[in-house]
Image (cartoon, rainbow, N blue to C red):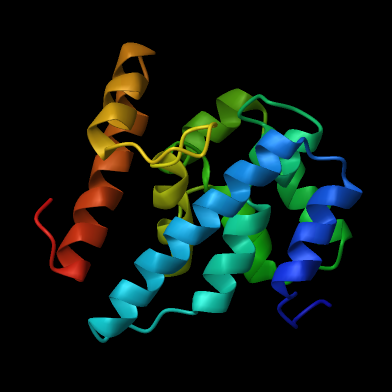
Length: 177
């Protein structure tokens, strides 16, 4: 696959092949649905967004949860996607979706390999953001709820990053933030 984007079916097959729980698969599908809606909304505003990349990246963003439910699932998931021959753009979405992004110093503290764990491209930001708006039970929640949860857990930097992505996407889509 290397540079060719896998299909939706291939992305779902990767989740199944790695024994992701039905809960994780359902969550990934719900995140993909919201992410694609967001990407199409931004396209209508004239922005260049690869909707297919957003969908595939969102479908496999939590593939690492097949091995761990810690924040490390982003790193583990990126390794799984790489081993499966997924393109680098998908691997980056998986790697950069947690917590609205992970800074270099946070990644060092977590013992992660050197790299960028902050969403950079619009597609990465859309998937990271959509993930923060979908609960484990596939219910959509307001961004404020996610921000409050991060703050209650003492993760104010993550809360700020989620707010920043929310504001950026809301501004691009013409919504009030």
